Amino acid sequence: ETDGGSAETYVIATDTTFAPFEFRDSSGELTGIDIEIMEAIAEDQGFQVEWRSLGFNAALQALSADQADGVIAGMSITDERQEVYDFSDPYFTGTMTLAVNEDQGDEIQGWDDLQDKRLVVKTGSMSEEVARERQDEYGYEITSLDQTTTLVESVKSGNADVLMDDYPVIAYGVQQGSGLVTVGEQVEAGDYGFAVNKGRNAELLEKFNVGLAELRDSGEYQEILDEFLASDD
Ligand code: GLN
Image 1: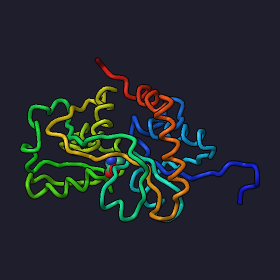
Image 2 (image 1 turned 90 degrees about the vertical axis):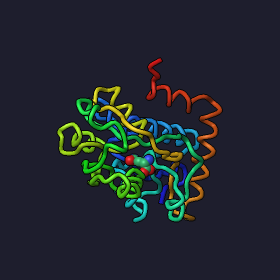
Image 3 (image 1 turned 180 degrees about the horizontal axis):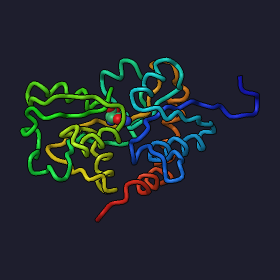
Image 4 (image 1 turned 120 degrees about the vertical axis):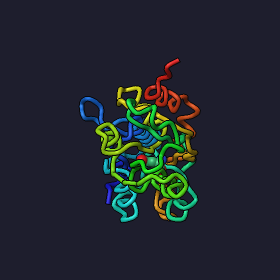
């Protein structure tokens, strides 16, 4: 449907508030590690990106419904997901963490303090899955919500006692003054990958992998990480 000379356009779905991977800057512009990596790969590989900032679970649903060509959303590569999606080479490694209101850091210091506590996690996320797996052992109640900002707000306001989400995202929020503290032993979250529907978009996946390798070689990949993950040491 594109005319001969113009570049291919791919619809890429992403999460809404998952800083520093995707978020809106002060002028309302979509930015973050995922966004900049994808834009740089698109430039390198000569395609256009049409963004859909939908939320994590909604992004996966859009992909499954063929309303998007791919998802980049700090998405962990898991065995279960690999049955439905093809993933790119990994581009980031993270963990998951618990976090509480900083005023409550004494009461809840880790997993063993979660008996009867209200835990919030993100719908469709790996944290939700881990929360369910460990629920019998630690005895908390689980509520699933759609966005990281909503998880943070519910812990801040006292509607929930504790959240679990990806460590780099929660740690970034803490740095930005979210008023939370991370507590407890972190959980492996696996590597992040870019996902397409299984067996249906090898061409886009190949472009992503080739472009990613080039960004790593040129140093641009590291520059993007440095821009969003300024170290405090
Ligand atoms: N890494 C987590 C997952 O893949 C969370 C992703 C997200 O919330 N955007 O489930």
